Image (cartoon, rainbow over all chains, first blue to last red; front, side, top):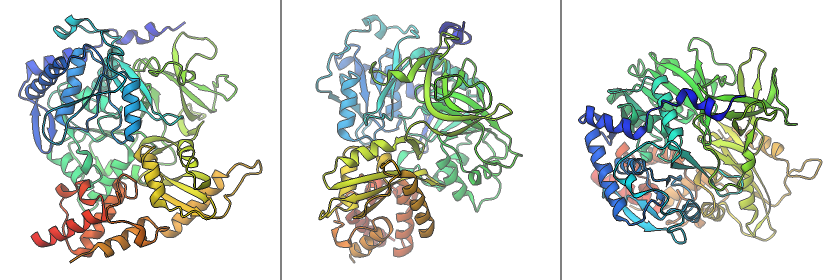
Length: 519
Length: 83
C-alpha cells in the first residue's frame, strides 16, 4: 500500500527555498533577480530589502503570528514574502480584487495579526491591525527561529485563496515542504537557473507564481514582472519578451491571445523563448495554432493543476500536429497519483468520463477551516492506498488510447480570464436584491476571456432596476471577475425546464446567438 | 472643450445598452462595477485615440485615468493640450 511518506519519498532530498535563495545571494549577488519597470533588482538588493522587511516584522511586536499581505506585485511585496519565508511565518496572500469586507473576513479567519500594504511607490510598508484576530495563533514559533533558519517541512508559509461555493473564498495553506518539492520539480522540468529570464504574467496572489516567481528565485534566475495595470497591452507584453530575452513563459490563454494580436505585423517570432506553458483554462484551437509560429524555438506544454494540489498533469504539445478539439491533459508529474471516479463513487479504469481525483507531493493537507468542505479531501475510494486525494470537481474523459481531456465540471464553476468562478454564487448574490424576481447567470464562451458571464434578470414589477445599480451591488459582494459582463433585464418570465427550474442551458443558447448577432 | 456627452454616449452604447445616457453620472466608478474590465479598457482607449485623435502611451494606461467619465474627459483634454 502506497503511503503519503512513500509518495513523497523521491522528494525527501528536496532543497529548502530559503537556503537556496541565500546561496544565490552569496554566489552571484549582482545578478538580476527581478526586472521591474525596466530596471533590474539584483539578488543582493532583493535580499537587503527582505532583511529590512524582516526587521520591520520583528519590530511590529506580533510574535510569530501570521500576517496578511495585501499588496499588488512589486519588488517590495516580493521582499515581504521573502521575509515571511525566512521567518517561517504564515502569511495570507489573497486576490486584491476581492471586496473589502471579504478581505477583512479572510484576514480574520487566517488569524492575521497585521495586514501589510505598500502604499503607492513609497517603498515603505504600512501595518494595520486586524480587529478580532490579534494573537489568535501567537507564539507558535520559538523565538530562536528569528535568528537562524532551519528547514521545517511542516511549517505553513503561503496561504492562498480559491473560489468558494458559499461565497467566501477558501484558504489553502501550503507547507514549506510542499513549496520546496514543487519548486524543485519546476526547476528541473523547465531548466530554470542562473541567467535564465522567466516572465511572470499572473498577479502575485495566484498559485502560478509558485512556478514563475518562486521557483525562478530558488534556482537563481531572473523574474521579468508584468505590471498588473498594463497586463492587457499586447504591445507592452511583446516588448517585455524581446527586450529581456525571456526563456520561459507561463500564462493563461488570454495572454497568448493578446500577444498574437500585437505580433501580427511582425515577422519571425520570439526567438529567445525555450518553454511555453499554457495553463489555467482550455485554449481555443485558433489561438493554439499560432503558438509554434510565435515561439519557433520553444517546447510547448499544457499544464493542469488546482490551487489545492498545485500542478498535477503535464502534456507536451506536438507543434507539427494541427490542433483539434481539447488538448490532452497529459501524464502525472513525478509523485502524482490520479483516479477517475464514476458518479456512484466507483473507480473507472477503462475509457469513459469521471471526476478527476489527484494526490500530489505539492498539495495542501486541507483548507484552513477544517470542517469547511472537508469532503473535498478524501481517501482512495477502494482503500487501495493510504494517500489523501483532492476531488478536483473536473469531469475528465479517458480516451481509448489512455489520454485524458477536460470535459467540464461536476458543479457550476467556470473559468473567467483564468479565474475559477462559481455561477451559482453569482446567482445567489443577485437573488438577494430586493428588486429581482428571478435570475439566471450563464457562462458564454468567448475566444479571448475563455468565458464571460451573462445575467438574465426578471425584475419586480414597477421597479426601476438598471444594470448600473446592479453592478454596484455586485461589486460590494463579489470578486471583480464574478461580476457579469452583460445584464439583460426583462419583465418576462425566464425560460423554465420541465421540472420548473430556470433553464440555464436555454438561456445560454439564446444569449450566445444574440452575442454572435452583435459582433 | 467638454466631451462628457460624447464619451457618455459611447460608453452607454457600447457597454450599457439598458441604461439611459442621462443616468450614467460623470463620477460613476466604471472599473469597480465591472462596466469596463481590463479588455473593455483597451476598447475604450482605442476609441478615445480614434475619436479625439490622441495617442495613449502604454505608460499612461493607468486605470485611474479611465475610472469615470469625468476622468476620461480630463485625460482627453490634457492630451490635446500637450499634443
